[in-house]
Length: 124
Length: 124
DNA sequence: TATTTATTGCGACTATATCGCAATAATACA
DNA sequence: TGTATTATTGCGATATAGTCGCAATAAATA
Ligand SMILES: [Mn+2]
Ligand SMILES: [Mn+2]
Ligand SMILES: [Zn+2]
Ligand SMILES: [Zn+2]
Image (cartoon, rainbow over all chains, first blue to last red; front, side, top):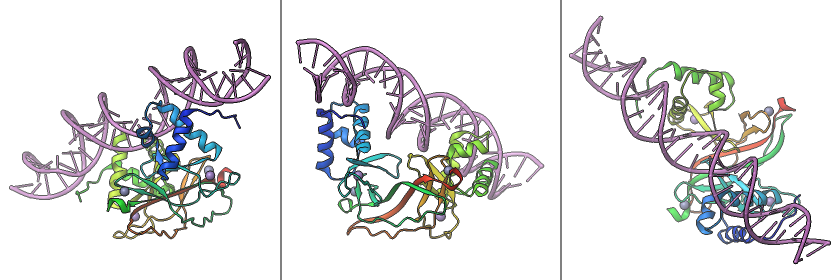
């Protein structure tokens, strides 16, 4: 893995992700910390994913959301939990549920992405 | 609901979806039945979704895939099963698994999208 | 301080999907 | 059958999300 450097942009992205607690899209992040180029933020997020600091969720809208890795140890990353996305406020949260996945014979598991959409408590 | 008309384009899209059995993206479909405008195919697919003939899956790549509704009755649509997407051949299939979803208090369920990625049997 | 190279900004670019509008054609009906 | 209605289509423009190449910048190291 490539050696990482400490930058303000990186710290800012990390801080806002920690602060919010929920998964955030690129533009959610951009709204909170202005002044960085779009490509820069995407690159930071992709680096976080590679490094296992953050995991990526693909919403029902096809957009990417990023959330801090809380439950997983640094070595074994398992993000096989279900997420919830609010159709009103767009917020994405990690749920507890981690469904059992049985693949057919000859199939190999690599990744899992699971989103329930609906209306969140705040939007009711 | 709007009254539908019978057109060759519609029949062609339906036929290829039935024939393949797996979920197909717009460009997979376009490769099989050439000669229709991109917007037209999208509109046909979106109509199918509205009418409950087809259900929409959002892949890990953020792309939309469409699959025939097989298990669900015309009135009650439940597509709460997990899908498999091959990272090699891009094929998307419906699996049997239908995870139990427990939402937190005050949350309402509307939709579900779940994809396991990996390598399919054919690509091993 | 000087060197190395990870990171950034910028603009161009790709990809997916939708939209407005005029033209076309499926359906209903006289 | 001929005509009116309007669902559907084609086309081009548009929107949005995300990546890429390259030169400039700046963090780390010596
Ligand atoms: Mn993790
Ligand atoms: Mn259905
Ligand atoms: Zn909400
Ligand atoms: Zn495959």
